Image (tube, rainbow, N blue to C red; front, top):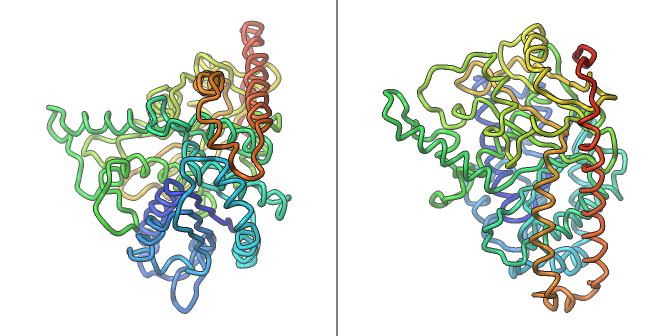
Length: 459
């Protein structure tokens, strides 16, 4: 049985990670009602003195969130020696997180990563969860990423990166995001793109559904979106619902590793099948049915509609419309009682509306996990390598340029030991190059042949 290690960095990374563990344990408890330490549990937990302990590393340069974890219901899940905190935080400064704390805590971080890896019989993947806008998530998060590549070069690195919205209250978030993206492009195998604004829109959509006039549109208490403590002590916060959506993304992407299925997908197969070029590894996730996350009492969506929803912009976790861009590859991770023939039929049905690159018309990867989300018959996570990420990167570049043109707030970064202005120019040059690569691919869309070969499902 293969295992993975989750690395949670910064406030957002730890909040999302803990919500994921809360939901994962509930899933396993629902399936394994006797609580036996079976093969499914062993894929993500160790049995230590009749306790289920997760090989994980939790890092934050403020104590608040980690202290809440230690006081909350998930305190027994984590090995306290695998937690690393400071007290002063990174001050929304990538350089402080990456340079100052990255250097000061390098050896401790490496030791904790090695210890977590040693607890795995067959380590397959590192999951790193962080945000891009602040200092610890962006700076120290990407420093940890580079350490993972240095220490474990053969182990797949899948990063969940939460991007700030244009109205983010951190003025320096464009600097932090562009500096972090330079490291993501260089060191990650896959990056799962999530935008805060998309999460806000989804939560608002669910709230509108819950206040609709149709009978039955009621969100149950303690549902996966509206109840967001997820292993943390204290009252719920406004962004808990947003964190829960990301946690559900992780729940679905790891389902094949945790449960049986007729067509399971190893985590390292994601990069192998979806990343044809090493720098173009930014994947667009979409979840469906969305309302199941809120546990709204409405009839189950028809299976075919679920597949259609997965390719609509309303279900993307970034603000993009993939149908008007170009697919390099796509993975469909299905849960529940769904047959290969159902997947094949829907791919053939949707094929005319999904423009793929001419050299990869059969660029599909599928997995079928027999265990559905708790309380639901089926679900679908789509991961698309699509050029629709280009506008997101262009908007980020524009926000960065507005600040950098005036050299605004630059002195806060340049006062940090080890930080140089050339890092900014290198980061924006990397982003420009990335945008240009997507632009060149987009330019080939007009030359696509109208009668493409029929698609087949990768096995």
